[in-house]
Image (cartoon, rainbow, N blue to C red):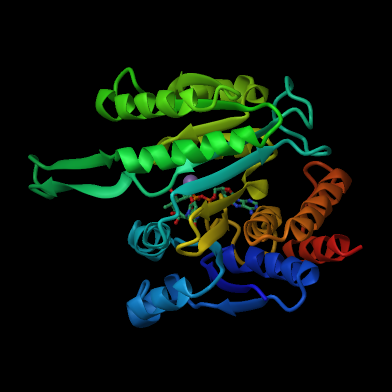
Length: 343
Ligand code: NAD
Ligand code: IPM
Ligand code: MN
């Protein structure tokens, strides 16, 4: 039976993860879920963010389900870098998979787009780029202060994520991959991405390709999200574009993601795209659908496509029955989804 490590984390993380666990338990009875106490509370209590011994234990699981990390009482970056990015990097989760669908029944904000018309997936590079942590600062807190942040792009890192995007596109109906970058300005990394993309594209004559600069892609995601199938892009562009994609498909409360290590050498990690939402934490009003759909991605990755389909079916029923704008209770949505998934 699958062994899942659970890192509920901060803010609404534990609230939404509890619902995802309810649903997982319903569709995969006997799934073994071990909770790990990591995040702001542990940091305040012990000063620890992610002890090596915990990292080693996490590595022994089949997958990780994560809620959200980050808290206003902890300096920015301590938990985001020290916990979340450390996991993504240590477990070489180089495919950050972020699907966006405009589900029937969901009121998207765009008058030009009808439910069912948007079904795209962003394959965000997950281990490199501006997230690599290269750079530094000089003359801190003086008028001469300088800070640099370098984007790390390796042929190996770019090629493997581009290959993943083409493989995914080959399994989808529209078979199209859009490379998003900023080759007109970021000429070093942009050239590496463009050349790698062209080389991999040549091996996939059955897949259509296009290139867009990231600023144009941000615009087209809002004006014509229907045009996208698979989008492959670097770490930071993917971070920003997937919040836009979430916004145009019913909001961040519905956006799921998987931080995937396709080789299986390390566990993959599944988490909502959203963060800890301090503004609504503790109120029981966070939408757990993003966490539940992330659990569906987990089920797919672990080889349980039928269970995954039951979860997405339950989400479809839930969303179709919602009244747009009506308030929701996190635990009630979780109860309904768990019941529907086994109905
Ligand atoms: P956020 O995603 O937490 O919140 C942005 C807005 O979306 C807020 O108004 C929030 O209430 C709303 N929202 C988010 N999830 C929701 C849900 N499930 N249902 C309803 N509304 C929801 O982003 P932020 O405010 O920029 O960041 C807050 C903290 O979370 C920061 O510490 C940040 O670093 C961290 N963060 C963590 C992750 C992660 O763990 N993967 C992702 C993003 C941000
Ligand atoms: C996300 C988040 C993270 C990211 C942060 C919290 C490190 O915004 O998962 O989208 O930038 O990847
Ligand atoms: Mn983000």
